Length: 611
Ligand code: ADP
Ligand code: MG
Ligand code: ZN
Image 1 (cartoon, rainbow, N blue to C red):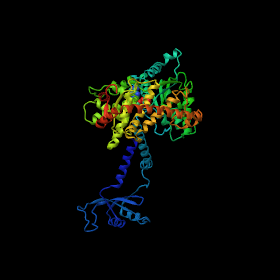
Image 2: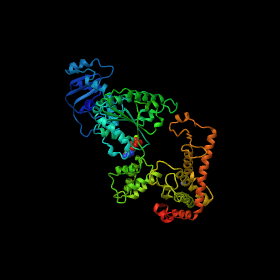
Image 3: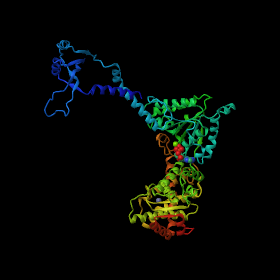
Image 4: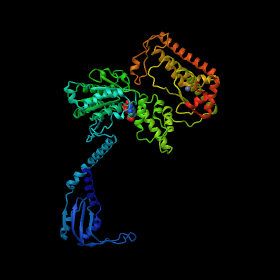
């Protein structure tokens, strides 16, 4: 506010000097002649400027005939400039004519000088404060009064007691995690009661689970349930340009948390700072290490009376530095699992709370269809369905919208580019091959949908939905799965006696599956019950390079042979099936070419229950 007033004062000063009406500008000669003729009453000299008043109003002599002002005005005041070499005679003649002479110091008034020198700074600071406040608003920070100059200060958002309104109600499923965290909630609510019984709380709890399963949500819910402040920061935010900033930020956040205790500190994506140290890859090591060390130091430095619980979340517990998961630090793990069918239904219920649903929407059936969807996927599903309904200007969201949303999320957006007739025929037989093998083999997951509408990267899709979520996979089930995966390629080969590139993904999946069966699950007689682990896909190279395969070249060759044999066997099986049921394959392919998509019921009608 201060700078605003300053601007106003300065402006009025300038305006006053610059725009003085009714003041005649005289040349020095004219001024002298006015003086000679005794028309000047008084003057004020300031540096080389003379301003003054006439004894009687004077009208200016027209300079040229053309530019005569419409209304020649009379002037009582004038202004002129003394030549730079001065006029030594001036004072004498002034005195002679009895003109009152006033002289002003050339220095501007003190307040103007002050303003002129400070104004740019005041303005700059004003703009800076304004912008940083804007930025903070945008970040949704609740910190209040944070100094824009403190780069190292924690960016953590502090949620007021009332601010984290998330509760366990908002988290579907995850019964185990809730049970474990309820203890923490109780403790945070009444730390004194627990302490008096000698109970100690683990300082660090690590939420472990795949992306989108609700880890962040869970941490919020713990804070909401306990009604304590929640300071959160994402690990990736620590990785800053300036070395040392991450560490000082950690220090600040913990300090704040201790001040607010009981409270919760939440470090999201902790793996991005807590990765195993010293792998020599990935860059930014010093910074990460300092940040990590600071976290460790803070966690070790808790006094017994400080009820600060540190929650951290990661989807890569395997890459965490051992120092981070040592006793006294994040020694407690809470698994946040992918939602099972019931949980998926509940998640859908939560995220369709405010959505007007049509009669036919069966969330349970939808939950069954969405095997492998995480909580975040399901939330997205509900949102996509609403968007689709809105786009079609419907009043309610119906089953069709949900079905379309599932396809969209699973396979991407429908593609516009149309396939030519031959390509369509190939895709139709390919998908018919998958579907038919799936229906003919016992113990496979029922086929929910077959389609030859191209979407995303795939030209068609056969969707199988397990009746139950499977936790333990039988060998026979996996072998059949291989046969189904290869069914598409086999059908193409059978009908067109030609191979296409369309089976790339199928082959990749089949090979990966066969390799797992052999190397991890001991499902090959030749290799026996030995686990042959190879470096896994680590997004952060470091670990993988250090961990070479721990078996001999001889074994490596055996594995390759076994993988090949397993895949080959199942391909033969699929081929036998399709060859013997060629009529059904043709039937299916024709139906697909006509209808593009076939549902489970339509398949039943077409092939009969057993086919
Ligand atoms: P993560 O941190 O595990 O990657 P998030 O907590 O960010 O996942 O989850 C993303 C979103 O998905 C959440 O905002 C929430 O709306 C939804 N979600 C995930 N899991 C659940 C769940 N179990 N119950 C309700 N909503 C969930
Ligand atoms: Mg998260
Ligand atoms: Zn395929």
